[in-house]
Amino acid sequence: MINDSRTQYGMLSKILHWGMALLIGWQLMKFGDRIADGEHWVGQTMVPWHVSIGSLLLVLIVARIIWAASQHKHRPEQDPQTARLVKAGHGLLYAGMLLMPLTGMMVMLGGGYGVNAFGLQLIAKGEELGWAATLGSLHSPLAWALTALIIGHIGMALLHHFRGEAVLKRMV
Ligand code: HEM
Ligand code: HEM
Image 1 (tube, protein in one colour):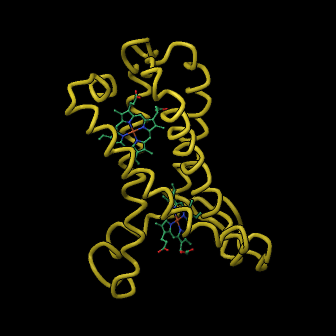
Image 2 (tube, rainbow, N blue to C red):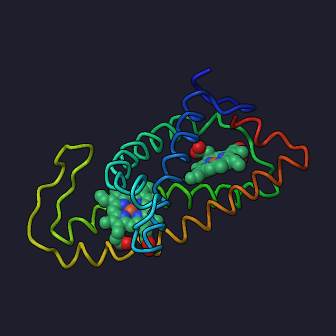
Image 3 (spheres, rainbow, N blue to C red):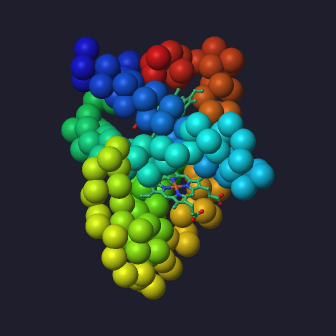
């Protein structure tokens, strides 16, 4: 049950998939800061958790990569005609999920703000770091790219589902 099989994703893969999808959706609310400088309900209720949830996501993506590697040999099979494309798409989603929190950390490090997650000081405040700020400047473009990927991913999942294929069923 906990492990994946050739026909179904297992419990842990499903919890990681849907739990992280929810948290990443929450993180993308940070785009809302562009509206009225964050002076509205999105900016005030969801966004203050950005660094904490982002740090949690960094731990979760490392765990997910290790878990995916351990399940690699017995995950559900892909249609051979599109298997390469699907694997590339999933690979890019993994890259995005890893690079988002890493570059987010760089924004904080670059500005000398330190990183505080759920009240825990993970990185102390310090001097501004030019190299970290440069890497951090990738955070926003990567967020746009990840958003586009996620929209494509959801679109493909729904397309397969409404064609009557069991792709969505094996993840729910
Ligand atoms: C999966 C994790 C993450 C996602 C999806 C994400 C997403 C985003 C998005 C959508 C924005 C708005 C960009 C814009 O308006 O152009 C943003 C900005 C920001 N994020 Fe994240 N983020 C994540 C993790 C983190 C982490 C871990 C930190 C800090 C430790 C962080 C720090 C920041 C900061 C300081 C900004 C505002 C500065 C900027 O726009 O460059 N983020 N993030
Ligand atoms: C932040 C949002 C999301 C991300 C980052 C994401 C990422 C991924 C990744 C990396 C996989 C490969 C399996 C794994 O390693 O877990 C996957 C599989 C899957 N996702 Fe998502 N996902 C997201 C949201 C969604 C949503 C909203 C849906 C439903 C409409 C969905 C439907 C699926 C399905 C059906 C599969 C199985 C595909 C297959 O077996 O080929 N995902 N997702």
